[in-house]
Length: 120
Image (cartoon, rainbow, N blue to C red):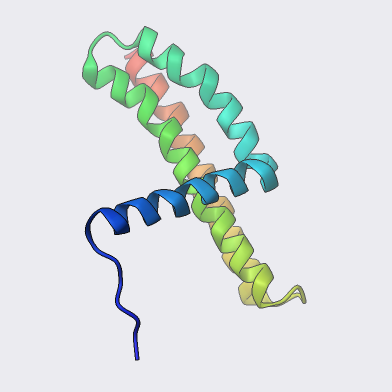
């Protein structure tokens, strides 16, 4: 039997708490997230300053925020795989590699967006 899920303000309040704990855990335990957060402290203000209009600002800032989101998801994948077991398994390695590839593609998007907006 399922316990009833909260609704309304209670659900929003609990979701905010879970999100806050997730961000704190990522900052505390994930060096890559801290590094990307530090990079975002440079990229986001610079993108807001260099963008000529709202669309350009969004194209310069958005990929950096997306990288942070992807890194959180990658960290969740890694934590889940590690929770299942630390022994080497081909699928576990593949899951971690796919998460890493997603982060890398986020950086490709960041670079391509900046090049297209600022050079063309």
